Amino acid sequence: MSNPENVKNPPLLRVDDIVLSFGGIHAIKGVSFDIIKGEIRAVIGPNGAGKTAMLNVINGFYKPDSGSITFKGTTYSSVKPHTAASEGIARTFQNVALFHGMSTLDNIMTGRTLKMKTSLFWHLFHWGPAENEELANRAVVEEIIDFLEIQHIRHTPVGKLPFGLQKRVELGRALAAEPLMLLLDEPMSGMNVEEKEDMSRFILNANEQLGTTIVLIEHDMGVVMDLSDRIVVMDRGLKIADGIPEKIKTNKAVIDAYLGTTHQEHASA
Amino acid sequence: MFYNEVGQFKTSYRADQALFPIRQDLIALGVFLIFLYAVVPFTFNNFWLNTVVIPTLIFGVATIGLNILTGYAGQLSFGTGAFMGVGAYTAFKLTTYFPEINIVILILTSGVTSAAIGLFFGIPSLRIKGLYLAVATLAAQFFLEWVFIQMHWLNNYSESGAIVAPTRTLFGVAITGPSATASARYLVVLSIVVLLTWIAANLVRGRFGRSWRAVRDMDIAAELIGISLFGAKLRAFAVSSFYCGVSGAMLVFFLYGAAEPNVFDINRSFSILFMVIIGGLGSIYGSFLGAAFIWNLPIIIRLIPLALGLRVEPVYTEFLTSMIEGALIISVLIVEPRGFARLWQIAREKLRLWPFPY
Ligand SMILES: Nc1ncnc2c1ncn2[C@@H]1O[C@H](COP(=O)(O)OP(=O)(O)OP(=O)(O)O)[C@@H](O)[C@H]1O
Ligand SMILES: [Mg+2]
Image (tube, rainbow over the protein chains, first blue to last red):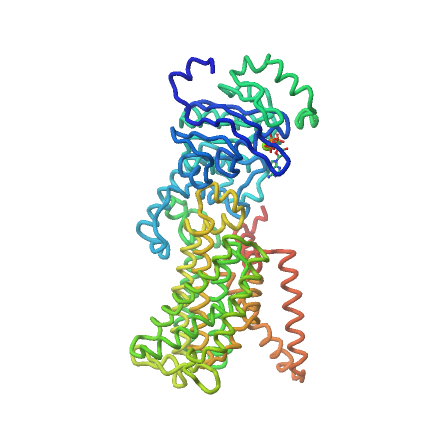
């Protein structure tokens, strides 16, 4: 790591030599990188590079074959999803994993699960501590709804929303947990330019105003270069480059990797 | 244009989170409750109370129970009948041992036993889902039925194998047993049902209800958000079985007066499941619509030819009932999986916008 800032700020998270395979498929073949508190860290690479798999390792959905994850100074050989969540890692999914039968409001309220503790007893009557807790959390959720400009769909079941809005609600649900670190898996896929601009603005605001550290997987190079502080490039399970956007743009290995594959978004454009 | 919310600004989240955010709904509910308490017991005759009203209320509670498990938490169960039976047998044993304790308290307590048994049989839900879990609950159904038949201690070694509700009183009035009047039984059932319905509505709108629906809609995302899947499922099994247990106990004590194990057989499980589907998965008031429909359909089919002066063999009315039930369940599942509750909601939304269609 040549970036002098790294020396000053110890990383919030570091993955070391992660190896992950499914039967005969080697999804990740020994990848290491770090994420500094407060930065926007992009992870890019062609389809099947192992980007999503890496996020799944970070928040405990996949258990790596070997390697380690160091978060807030503690080193784990693998993380449990619940631990990741309670330690402050939230995420969105490539294919949107909202609760389809629930309203926008309820989806985002569910994001506050770990902030809510009142016992079943009070909820039987929706009274006292239970009611106070619901109302206090509702107020926070309303702030997020305002922030994401989705007031008009507050009570709409999310299954009925267009994909772009669903992505926004999913971001809201992740933000509701007030995470230290937010993992975003292609938050702008399938969006038009305007929607991408909105989403970029929300991500930047979350990063700057709330201080959330962000890991961003994205295929739109314009967006990636604009938003991110540093970029990890993966290809076929390996890390092929790591650095600031200016360096990545001109990196030969990166250009080769992208030219050598037909890319999803390029192919469809 | 009286049915709208113009002028009722939701000044606070408290108002928006209320059970009935629209004032007209609250007024309608109040009127309905007054009707149920002040009019029904004095104007409905024994036939209506015993064949229509009381059973609809009692089965409505079991339907809420299964709806919490299946409609809200997404866990299919075929064990409803057995969990109802656990409640009935427990209440029977409890009142045998503690005749001086009020029967209403014992019936609610028997729901706790049922909850514990339901919790136990819900443990496989950690590992298996969907139809496989349903098969596991089927095993619970058959096992518990076998226990009801084989363990004669449960029916106090009665010769017929049936349990018989003894006479018990509330405020000096008989509410169970042969001397209890239909209106006395009705008022007690109504009060238990109102309380349990209100509690269910509270549960499903708060954090526990959200965790159930989250597990139902996308269990992976729920887990990554920090919801304990196992906890949420077990809680659903326990709460659901509590409702089923209380319903089963009420069935014996406030309606049938006596019951054999076959009251709680697999057919009961299916009939409650049909009530959930017809009424609407994930709806509390829909549970009563479903219970009312499935329970009363055969009665209506029997009564219509009678009213028209026709004589129809019972075989045919039974056949017709099954046909209509089956056809309706299939069409509800295909056309509107959220059942009658959803249809009612659509009608209400239309009413709210009336006379402007958009
Ligand atoms: N659950 C799984 N079972 C088997 N193989 C998997 C699984 N998850 C991922 N893989 C494989 O691991 C490799 C990396 O997949 P991954 O989803 O991480 O790619 P990606 O970089 O996110 O690609 P994309 O840009 O298309 O989302 C692929 O070859 C994929 O087929
Ligand atoms: Mg991916």
